[in-house]
Length: 335
Image (cartoon, rainbow, N blue to C red; front, side, top):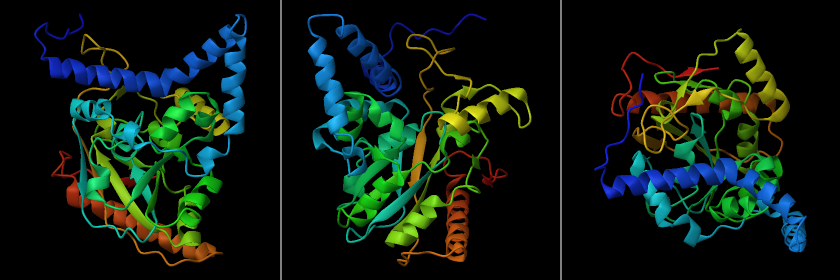
């Protein structure tokens, strides 16, 4: 079957939106590898010292991702992110006010293939997070390995992104004052393997570390769900028990990231490529769950709060699913 090409008379604003998504896709997927190749190549030129300077800076600055990062309002408010949000489009839905005198731990679901909703809403001001939640600074927390690449790490931190390591969470929630929101895509790499249309699955049964951190710091828990995240790509089947799923699970276990087999659309055609499809995303920020500080939480306290969080997340899903295009007979499954 021939690919379906974009019409020549596509409006300029749609071209710009596609370009913004293409730039984002390159920056957060390939830029770090491109920089590595470039730095190695420089070693064999008269500018070899540039490689040493950049790698030296990354080493000297290695603790910053675990110390709140280095956010830049200029970066977060860049017009490119607004164009990216308009591409889908992305909407941030507020259900309750947040007290800026408290700290929060946001749990974002589902992971999807590339966590587009989490980035647009919490690592940029494309959907006006700071206007909706005045006094709250969002910090999207990602894998530690992402901060080992020169230049790429600085771009990520400029968006307010931080390391997801427990040391980083401790700093955000316990040492940097009130009004911070550590944003974690809790399901992680394993949940990416569940990213299919009409498949509302969250991987939480083995994920209780974020609950413990919330208790240790008395940070209120805020469940969030992005409706439409799993519709952005088509993922090829890899059923439980299949060899493909086994390989993917082992990759996740040993390297911390999964390898979903997926495809989206291209730049000039709609049939195949690695850009996400234009599907509306609605990230609903739920009501905060009050958490009392407990420096050494018991397993029972962790289990109780985990159950409360699951119930709140399921209620959030049920209350909003029909409004945002999910069939009424579909439910949120917890694995």
